[in-house]
Image (cartoon, rainbow, N blue to C red):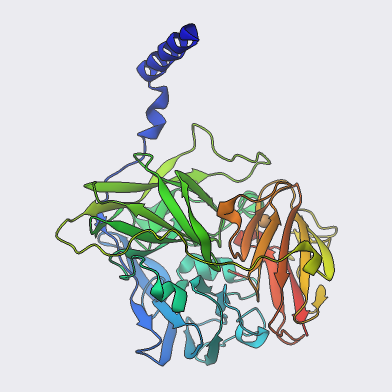
Amino acid sequence: MRRYIYLSLLIAVFLSACGVDSNVQNAPQAGQNPLEIPELLDSRDTPEIELVMQNGRHEFYAGVQSETMGFNGNYLGPTIRLYKDTDATITFTNDIGEPTTVHGHGLHVPGEMDGGPQSVIQPGESWQITIPVRQEAGTSWYHPHMMGKTAHHVHAGLAGLYLIEDENSQALDLPKEYGVNDIPLVIQDRSFTDGKMNEYAVAEQQIKNGLREDTLVVNGIVDAYHTVPDGWVRLRLLNGSNARFYRFSFADNATFHKIATEGGFLNQPVAMTYIDMAPGERNEIMVDLSDKSNAALIADLLRADSEEADLWDEDTPKALVVELRVDPTLQASGTLPETLNDIAYFERADATQIRTISLDMEVRGGTEENKDMFGINGQAMDMGFINERIKKGEVEIWRITGQRMPHPFHLHGASFQILTLNGEPPTEADRGWKDTVVVWDEVTEIIVRFDYEATEEFPFMYHCHMLEHEEYGMMGQFTVE
Ligand code: C2O
Ligand code: CU
């Protein structure tokens, strides 16, 4: 035993002398630029919310203008706060000069309000929806879903957050001050030439692996810092990248707590030191900064183009997400509750239908030109074809597998629960309400009840949320009637 301790000590000394553990240090930990916090539009103060999609110019690097798109601005869009059991009216106006749509990713609404590829807004026109908010508190988002243009429009900057609040979220003693200790982080990767954002372009390799770029952009800012109070801080993370997966952690390896997945709070906080997130996923985490002067949230830029369940290795490049600078003069508020939610779990026996879904990297007859490279169950996305027909109010199990690499599988119109994750039972951290889940080549089973109608005219989509895979066929449509 003693011999073993000496041996490990020796190895540890040797490794640190060689700088082997220096990968822990190699991410920048100091931000240069103040984080931007998207404007908050509260549906209680603004009963009729107007969002205009426009072409803009955004400075990622001082003095250099990049051509971008945004809602009511140059890049990204306002955060919209919605309240359960109220209705909110939003008008989306298209001023980008080409057709697009606006999908509410994570919203529980009927197909005609979902903003899928059928709900095209022509240039100069508007699309108005009145959302009956009936789902529990959570973090959703909006982005275009135009056939053949989703990846392009999201990349240009068209995305924003919906924060849904309910009685529970308002009663919990959480950090709740938007932008102060309840901080939205829209995390994306972009690349730049002389400070100018490279426009969206993909070659065959990027279509296959998904577009992955080298520079992290958070709320439109590179190398961001943000000043926070010296208490609990709540971060709402959205992986808004086209295809990049991330592993988030703090530079000092601090423990933080995951409190929510896409569709609501977990029952209890789950302590962790890192969290992996695929495109489309949202998680809320909380970290206690009461005895710190700063904390750097770091992202490992995962590759996600291999079949290995662990996409991380020692050489994974790292980047700063945001440096949190603690200012003790700011008033801290909120704490980490012991209990957050009381999720009603489905039972396998509740399901009346089991569907098998395979995310295919090769579809027979597909070519790059016709965008039918990929598919689902052997079928590339076809707006004229309904892949699945679902009975409203029924509980279903979907058994999903992927090919060649992990794929973030996303379903419109409902939140689901995970029964099996890549062949294993989910851990507590994955037992929340979700709408996007990473699927590997072992089966992932989700259980879901479809409560919202979607007709053939306005069906729901299900697809891989690596936007290049979605654009090139890995998407299908279903009705709920
Ligand atoms: Cu976030 Cu079908 O999309
Ligand atoms: Cu995919």
